[in-house]
Image (cartoon, rainbow, N blue to C red; front, side, top):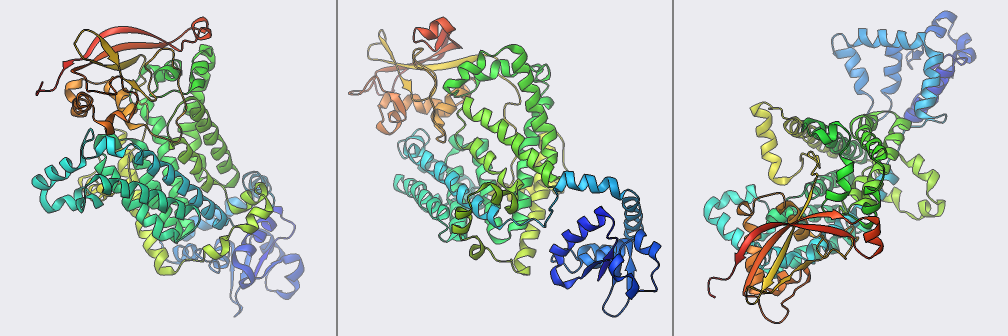
Length: 593
C-alpha cells in the first residue's frame, strides 16, 4: 500500500498515474481514509511524505517509498536498485523529494501544464503500427524512384557502370570488400540484378505497408537499399539516403521493441534537426549570421517548386524573420523532443510546420516527408486516438501485431541502442569540428559501412548565385542544340515543376557540378561520352534528346547565370533570365571519330 495526502492535488495527480503503472500490485489510499489503521504514523508524517506499507508490515517513506511503489511497474525497478546500491544516490533522492514536497502546489500546476489533466502512462502500439505502415511508403518511393533511372545511372551502359565498380574493387581490395561495401551485387552486378533489387524492394515496401511479414520485410528492405547505396556511387551520396537507412534500421528495432524504438527515433530526429542548425552557424557563412540566407535560398536551391518564385518575392524583412524562425526550430525546439508530453507535442508541430514550408517551395524527394513522419513518435496512442476516426483505430490490427517483447529481445535492443547513441554522439562531435578519441572513432568506423549512424546538416553554406550547366550537341561544330533535363532549369520559358517524392539524381548532380571544377568530376566526363554515343538508357534520363535518330559528332557544356524572371516577364510566359558566363566544358568528341 502507498498512502498519500488526499488533500494535496499534486499527490493525488501522481498517485493516479502510478496506479495506472503498477495496477493492482499496489493499493493507493489517501491517509485521510486509512490513518486510523496505522496509529504508529503521525498525521504530520502523512502530510510530509508518502508512506509505503509492505505486506509484512515494514514501512518506508518519502523517496524510498516512491521507488518501492515504482518497483512494481515493468521497467521501473532500476530506481530502487540505484537507491539501494549507488553511493550517494539515496541522499540526493531524499533531498530532491524534500524540495518537491515543499513546492507541491506550484508543481501541481506545472504537472497539469506539461502532461495534461488526465495523465496516463504513454502507450505506443498504435504509433508504432502507423509509423511502420507509413514508413513502408517512404521505402516504396525511394525504391521506385531509383528503379526508373538505375540502368541509366549505374547499368552496364550507364554513366557509372556497376560492373566496372565491382571489377575494380574486387581487384584492389579482395575479400575485405564484403565488409567495406556490403551489398548483394557482389553476387551479380547485371542490369537485371539492379532492376530486381529496385523492384523487389518496391514489392517488399508494399508488404510492409500492408503488414505482411513486417520484420522480414524490414530486414530485406535494409539489405537491398544498403546495396543500392554502395552500388549507386556518387548518385547515392545524398544525406537522405543515409537518413533512410538509419531510420530503416531503427524501424526494424521498433518492430521488436516499441518503446526503445520510439526513443531511438526521437534521438534521430533530434540529431538531424539540431545538427542542421549548428552547421549553419559553425560554417561562419555571413548569410546565415545576418539572417539573409532565405533571400537567396528560394532561387539557388537545387530544384525549386513553382511556389519558390513567389517565396523569393517576399519582402526582405519577412525572409529574415523566417530565417530566424528556422534557427529557433532547429536549435531550440529539438530539445523539447526529450521533454514531457505537451512540450514534445509543441516540438512536433513546429518541426512539421518547418518541413511543410520546405516541402511546398523545394523538391527534396521523400526527405521532408520522412522528417515529418519522424514527428509521429513524438505523440502517443492517446493523442492519436483523439484525432483518428474511431472506426479506423478499431480496424487496425494493432494489439495483435505487438506484444510485450521478451526480456532477451529487450536486452539485445538495449545494447544496440547504446551503440547507436554512442556512434551518434561521435558523428555529431565530428560534424561540429571535434576530434573524438581514437577508440570512439574506431567503434564508429566498424559500423560505418552499414550506415547505421550518419552526420547531417544541409545548406551549411548558402549559395548566392544560381549557375547552371547547359549541355549542347552538334553535327558540324557550327549549329548547336541543347539537351533539356527533366527537372533542372534549362529553357527560360519552362518553369519549375513538382517531383516529390521522386529523386532525379542526374539533375541533382548537375546542380552540384555547377559548384565544382569539371576536372574533378569523372562522372561528368562519362555522361558526355554516353551522350556522344547516344546511349538510350542515358538519354532516357533527359526530357529532350536533340539527336533522336543519330548520335552527335560533338558535345560541349556552357555555363550560365540564372535568375528568376521579373513579374512582367513572368506574365509573358518567362520564368528565368540567364546570362552566358562561358564554357564549362570544352568541345569533346569520341576518339573513334
